[in-house]
Length: 178
Image 1 (cartoon, rainbow, N blue to C red):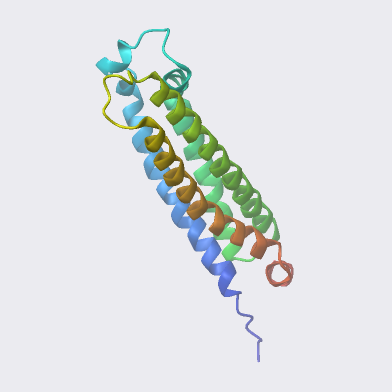
Image 2 (cartoon, rainbow, N blue to C red):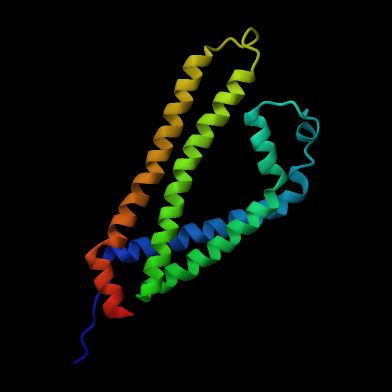
C-alpha cells in the first residue's frame, strides 16, 4: 500500500492565500494599466503647479509612472501565483520564493506606513489652517492611528506566514515532497 503524506494545513492556507493575493494583483494591475492612459490627464492633476509640497509631489510622481508600476505588479503577481501553485506541489524552491515575497510584502507594508504618514502630514500642513474648522492635530493623530492599525492588520499575518514557512514542519514537507 502507498503511504499518502498530508500537506501541512498551514502550508495549504499560505499557498492559497498567495494564489488569491496574486489573482487580485493581476486584476488590479490590469485595471491600473487600462486606466494609466487617462489618469495623468485628469484636469485637476494637469493643473497642479510645480511648487506643490512634498506630499502632493510624491503622489504626482507615482501617477506619472502609473503604467510602469502596474506592469511590475502584474509580473510580480505571475511569479507569486506560479510559486504558490508550486508550493502546493511541495516544490522546495517555491517555499523560498514565497518566503522572499512575504518578506518583500512585509517591507512594503512598513514602507507604506511611513509613506502614508509622510504624505498625510505633508498634505495637512499645506491646508490653509484658518479656512479649515477641524483641529489638524486631532486629524493627524486619527490618521496615524488608522494607518497604524491597517499596517498591523497586514503585517501580523505576513509575520505568521514567514515564521511558519521557516519552520521545521514546512521545510520537512517540501524536502520530502519535492
